Amino acid sequence: MYPEHHESHAAAAFFPSPFKRAAFLTADGAGEWTTTSFGVGNKNQVRIHSEIKFPHSLGLLYSAFTYYTGFRVNSAEYKVMGLAPYGEPKYVDLILKELIDLKEDGSFKLNMKYFNYCAGLTMTNQKFHKLFGGQPRKPESPITQREMDLACSIQQVTEEVMLRMARHVHQVTGEENLCLSGGVALNCVANGRILREGPFKNIWIQPAAGDAGSALGAALIAWHHFLGQERHVSQEDSQHGSLLGPSYSDQEIAHYLDEEKAISQKYSNQEMLIERVCELLLQGKVIGWFQGRMEFGPRALGNRSILGDPRFSEMQSRMNLKIKFRESFRPFAPAVLQEETSKWFDLNQESPYMLLVAPVSQEHWTQDSNQLKGLDRLKARRSSVPAVTHVDYSARIQTVDQNRNPIFYALLKNFYTKTECPILVNTSFNVRGEPIVCTPADAYRCFMKTEMDCLVLGHFLLEKEKQDPAKIHREELSAFALD
Image (cartoon, rainbow, N blue to C red; front, side, top):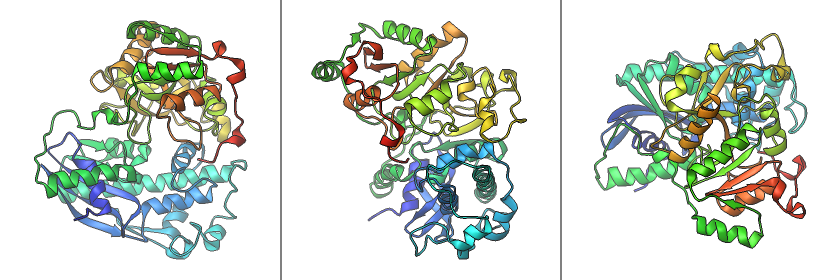
């Protein structure tokens, strides 16, 4: 027997969650013929109650705007989400009138005369282009106010659809907990609104919400449904911080560094290493941080991360343009000590997987940037942690606790002791167009071809200025594929 695509999404959403029973909602582009489903998980069973079928898809609607605004479909939808706060929702009414027939319960149908994805090689067609006043933006060309307004509009429509769905699922199931999965569940802005404005007491989102998580879901379906194994639930989810990938010992790291003739210093204990890394962070250095098991899913959660001091205004642009080789408008996430979260953000629950967006607390705001327009809003210092505060004063938050990631927690704790700021910039350890680094070799190559200042591999610290200049080969933007 083979589990269905959205059944696997549902299993990945519910079975690792900390709930004995919960409603689930899955949404993506398409899997087999389903694009959206909801139902209930109870003990060791998930049951789908209702579905929306292809070609009517919230994920494909969002991807159509990803394509139209000049970004790469199925990988750059998060760019549209990040661009949305720079624009105005000028096209919301047009989208709701022409593209999607949205019902009060969140069900919908798309007007397929505007789309090309059923039979063509593009997402949109000439009728779509005429409706929005021009041809799709060419990739890598300047972003205009139109793209910002389009991004803002489709983001707002997506949030409205998700909110209506969540309210309907709650009404039908009567459950107080909600689990989310499918690619649309990576829209952490919509997730934050469901948490704040929706009817559910608690929500839990699968960290690998896209199709990678379906592999986990399929295995869990086999374990619980086909083999009848019991499910054990605790207060903490069973995803283990999503630190499920490979790890490398100090001996393996040392062997690789010797082969490369890299200059490094090994620290005999974790406390000394963390002390030195914090000193470097306070100097404005950007740190490649490689520890323990690699993360499962699209987010770096403190084991394959690039870290910086969030208090430096220039940190966002420097990390975007010189290290990540990506667009300057894209925001970075704050990793924050879990017990300090509510003092800095309007969030009263944990967010260990960076899948909830919430506002920065107003007491930390420093300037109103709403008077500026478009990308000029980047110039304003919006809060006391500007590198992780988006232009609408929001942040995609990762809460860090001692149980899931004790080493990363200890680093944050030390930084907090020194600065009274319990936050670090945390972005994935990669450059655009490449996957997150997995091995020490991956990390070293990324370190040597970017303007990253330091690299931590286990207990080893490498500083760029001490490396052989002949081995440093900084790449230009053109060297990297589109992401």
